[in-house]
Image (cartoon, rainbow, N blue to C red):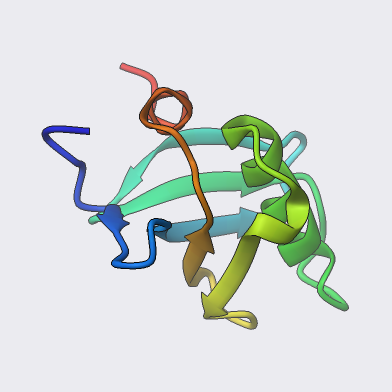
Length: 101
């Protein structure tokens, strides 16, 4: 990606890190826009017992076409502000995460 958005950073190991603002308890899981310099994602799961984190990693894996084990929360497991590492996501797949509008 030539002009990477502020929520996306290439890592030296070939992966990417994503800055996410998670909003658990939504009716459906979806990318809804930006929250500051983070990508805002609504999650159709409560913030209890890691359920929202599981939905987030599964959603990102599906959107990016990578195995679920290729998506890992690096920081913010108990916070809305999360840093997520994704292994080997293509530029085309990352474009699918761009917020609407």
